[in-house]
Length: 85
Image (tube, rainbow, N blue to C red; front, side):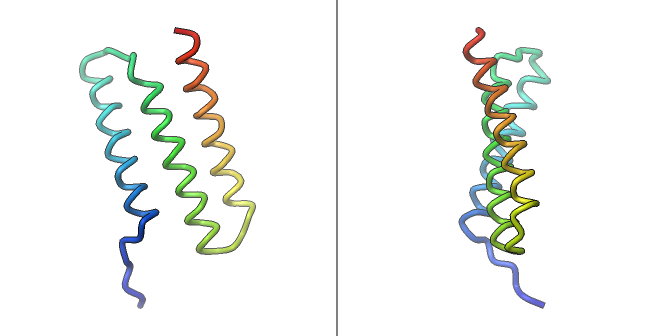
């Protein structure tokens, strides 16, 4: 079995995951949801990285397109929320 290395995409995904979890936890504990769009931006980054890693691993475009579509929707909703406030 291959040894799993910590490549740059996995490290970036881990950083985005920790940041999104920290911001979401802060919003949940303090009931101050003003930082929620920032959490959505980090979540969209996570989905973009997942799509890139999946395409790199399997060379199948369809599974990556779904991840990019979710990332675009999250970015759209985050930007819309930022602009509406």
